[in-house]
Amino acid sequence: MPSRFNLFPFAVGQILVLKKKHPCGSERWRVERVGADIGCTCLGCSHFHVWPRRQLEKALKDVLEPSKPM
Image (cartoon, rainbow, N blue to C red; front, top):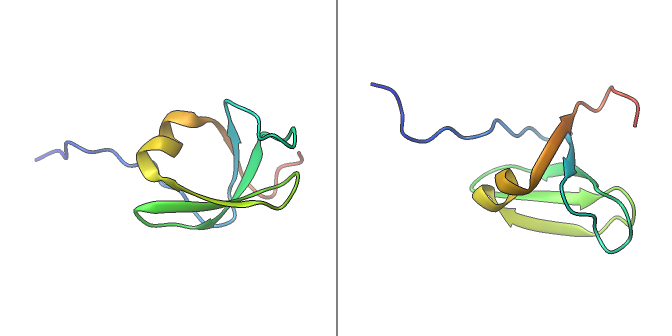
């Protein structure tokens, strides 16, 4: 039976591009912790923030692998 919930497969080390910019001007975040909440570090100012998974999935614009150039 198919699941009602489709969770985005976040992984530690992924670079996320969000729809809105952080006050420092960067829109790129690196995933540091994965679970019910996702912990990310801003690549512009090194600020650490924890989002609920659903909120982060809505704010997500693009996912870059760490090996891709920024």
